[in-house]
Length: 202
Image (cartoon, rainbow, N blue to C red; front, side, top):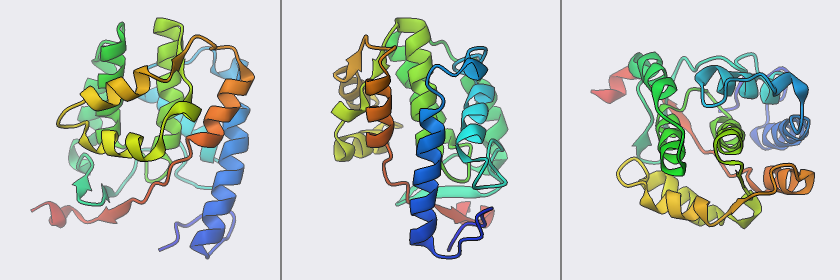
């Protein structure tokens, strides 16, 4: 199934290529972008603004909460009926320590507020929190893709693995364009989500 898009593309492989090309370019433009200096980092509103910026040229739903349920493999993300309450609770979560920040990141991943592009938006969102609160960011080029995906898959049950993995890739080079751009290029992990109906939850 090919997502309806503004580009008029009906081939999934072609859409994936164009989506990556356009959203990467938009992600790079976020670096030291004054438009985003006033974002309240760690909030759903901030994440929605990031998502809108990345995908507004591709999808009508850019920056809008999903209207379908989502699953990846055997894991189902937060049911649509609970999404807004979950996001309100995530907004209230503390974010003053590294552990608190990653715990918030894990909860936002479970929420998965968008139809597509959650991971890409959330990694920028995470770095904004880390930068503000700890003066650090993740150097995503140092994060192994398979290790990351496995750690995130297991994180709702036990988040120790993702905490250790990301901590080992932290850097103080928060103003390095090279680290940022390299990280954007590296962090475009595959997102193979499928939608499912509410009755599938029963």
